[in-house]
Picture 1: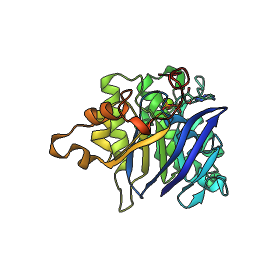
Picture 2 (picture 1 turned 90 degrees about the vertical axis):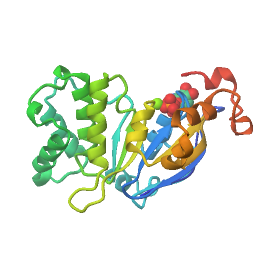
Picture 3 (picture 1 turned 135 degrees about the vertical axis):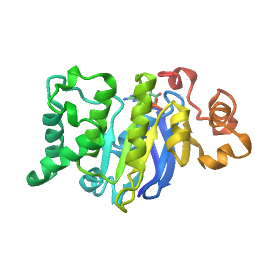
Length: 260
Ligand SMILES: Nc1ncnc2c1ncn2[C@@H]1O[C@H](COP(=O)(O)OP(=O)(O)O)[C@@H](O)[C@H]1O
Ligand SMILES: [Mg+2]
């Protein structure tokens, strides 16, 4: 469903994403982890067509992101790190607007919006201006806009950042329902970035860890946690400065610590 081959992104001399490859099967939920500044958002922006890669290729649902960008984007729902804000807009109007942008045929828009509202628990607030909602509900709106055109793939960039513990659990349940197969159909294929490792343990079957733009781990979660291992320990071991030796990119501290 997702194939990523040797994606690289340079900003001048700085390599933000360095030869990252991975794949995800239909219905697979992948935890995309790494310290701040590792290159997660950059990778996600490339996969969703918002940023050109310097090198490498990728395909979403069989559509090459460079050769068939429209088809690839149609197959993808994206919750960006900082979603665009339309505080005055009512939830329903906003989702209808997004469904137009995503080429949902006019005759199907209402049904598509109703379905997204329902799946995200927004039906009761559909006429409320987005700016009046709590942050947890605004994040649900962000997820609703990602699923409104029924994409097979969801790319979610830190969907629970800034939420309180109850809101985090609610979003986690929502993501679990999107991942689950329903009416005999495979659930969404999801790439999820987060710093909440419990979220990964609850939702993801596989973990990809990047550090300084390079992939340093790609492993099923059950292998990681077998024999009492913890994701926390693996994260610390692979990302604390100086521990992976040759795998570390050669950027200076000044460059690589920019956002850290
Ligand atoms: N437009 C840009 N120009 C230069 N450097 C950038 C730009 N965008 C991101 N970076 C750098 O690329 C690295 C990866 O950033 P990002 O993908 O946002 O990491 P993450 O999402 O893992 O925190 C960081 O060091 C960041 O400062
Ligand atoms: Mg980021």
